[in-house]
Image (cartoon, rainbow, N blue to C red; front, side, top):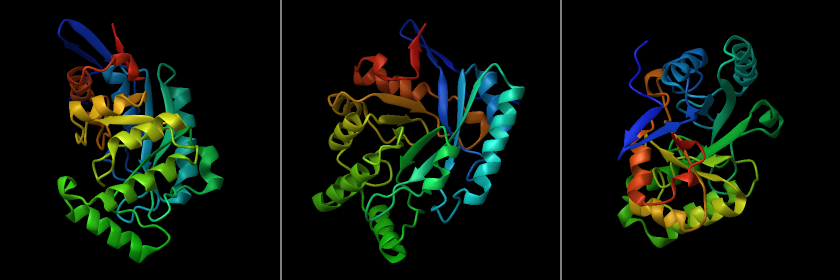
Length: 258
């Protein structure tokens, strides 16, 4: 198996290592590889931890089926016994739903996950389908630089509601799908102990964005958002983003200098 990613990256005379990649997808939702494929890829590039976080069930295009989650849990437990040199965790990338910021995770399923990621996705439909779909279409068709203040405020408040549920480990690709107030989002993340993801698949944040969010004393998490095993552990663009933003790299929980 050939891999484009590598957990080691050198820049400006410093060697950087990503220790974990907890946002990867599999065939259970929108990915091209199995859970074991992602585990093998993570070992090949030198990660110490791999996380599987398939899309939540409310995504009409490729959300994981709720009845398959126990099978995913069983598979992760089996693989833990086979691959003892790497930590394997099961998460989910839950959808933040409109209009109340609910997450598409059934409370009875929370015990099956080691962590919960959450983010906006156009294909997620909430309990009010017409309102959800119309909201998604409007956000999709509205360039971020032309988004009215009212839209930005609604989207930001929706995220706030989701984060205040107390179950979200990290907010995925903020500002990529729906226009939001990034500084306010970072402030809420800091208040709730939620990490802000620096996503190397959706490169929506600029160094200025990251510096502005860092002012809220929030911590960050680098993720590949890999939809194929070849991208597991891909983190170089995020390291460049961190260094170009001039924030303290220690604010990134899974990045270390060697």
